[in-house]
Length: 410
Ligand code: HEC
Ligand code: HEC
Ligand code: HEC
Ligand code: HEC
Image (cartoon, rainbow, N blue to C red; front, side, top):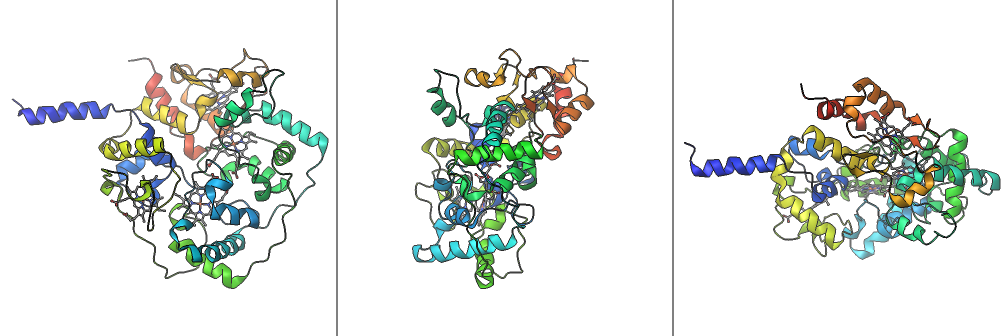
């Protein structure tokens, strides 16, 4: 007979093995806590954390004034951002000089800017507005127009949308730069949370014009010249402020700067909110500007982190990917997700919603699913909604999982 204690343990681990992905686990992954707090290989695989944008030649060319504002206060400049404030760890009197040095460093590693275009071509920006509201952007982002009589819904929709970058976005991108980003968002943001909507160059330019008009008007960038001494100092800050932990590919000259060591992930037992989730984070911690609710769910996730060692089942993994990549914005599967009532308005034909993905692994072959994911699909069913491309690295696990989860029991 099994000793009672072991039997209880087995029951407990059976319960744990079926544990669903919790909101805390999702936040830990999307905020990339394990970039600094190194996890076990099993935990790293299960979390599949959101990679941070690339900086340097594969990154975007962002305006110097925007960079300065964003680094000085990420949340204020881009409300809702997942980038922590790392400069807050510096004494007040050092912060401005450090920000300045970082701006010089970041500009020095950017690729040359795209040519800027005039922003006020009315016909193009009208076309941009139409495309923005039709191809699928508004299934994740806020719409700017509503049918007559329903304008009051726009604020509610904006609150439930992925932030676009706020009015400050016009200081970040020229029309040419934003068009380049929209045409191939995966180049600078390999995590695929912002998918490619297969825009042509012309379509991307039209949407960029429209979005920058919604911002502050897309002023041309003020000329900026790099001071090599400041850039070198900035490279030092880039290492010492732990930027390298998340932005792993930024080209950095050899440096002797000390990078603070963070505890391993499994050491974060967090009996109470300390370190990065403390009410007032101190020392070398990362300041994410977490809400009380976020702190509570992250704490719960850290306390039950044993479950993160357990690989997810096929169905759990599908649900997790459909959540992080927001497939649910357009598709339902097993009564979850699908286009919400408020957003049906933007479909053209409300009846023609994207196909449900319930049982899709039994209906389509692995190859057929792989093809849709790799090359996207322009709506053939009378709608201009497009099935976007999320990047092979982010979706290649799905065809097998769909088959495993949906194939009829043998
Ligand atoms: C499936 C959901 C989804 C769709 C569809 C989508 N986006 Fe995004 N978009 C995102 C997410 C998520 C982010 C944030 C990405 C990140 O943090 O890596 C984002 C980011 C952005 C940004 C901010 C870039 C920055 O520098 O801050 C812009 C602008 C944008 N999207 C425009 C668009 C446009 C235009 C379309 C349609 C052509 C579109 N998006 C379609 C999810 C989506
Ligand atoms: C926890 C990981 C993390 C750390 C640490 C971090 N960043 Fe970021 N960074 C991000 C994320 C995530 C974004 C995307 C934010 C968004 O668009 O909302 C970002 C965006 C950026 C961007 C804009 C890139 C683009 O394509 O829009 C720059 C520039 C940047 N970070 C510089 C820095 C610097 C400098 C530091 C150190 C002071 C730093 N980051 C530290 C995660 C991090
Ligand atoms: C840019 C690096 C970085 C990121 C990203 C980061 N941390 Fe930290 N964290 C640190 C450093 C450095 C410390 C202080 C040294 C230590 O205690 O490990 C710390 C401390 C902590 C502590 C206190 C540890 C203790 O026992 O005192 C907790 C808890 C924590 N972090 C949780 C998190 C969570 C949750 C996230 C994601 C939301 C996160 N951290 C993201 C660098 C980071
Ligand atoms: C912006 C909306 C949108 C998002 C987000 C989206 N899709 Fe789609 N998807 C579509 C549309 C529209 C179609 C139908 C294209 C057609 O055949 O006309 C489609 C078709 C499909 C199909 C083919 C289904 C069938 O029965 O033919 C699969 C599989 C699929 N999507 C998977 C995904 C996955 C997985 C994700 C997330 C990684 C995702 N989609 C995200 C809009 C979207």
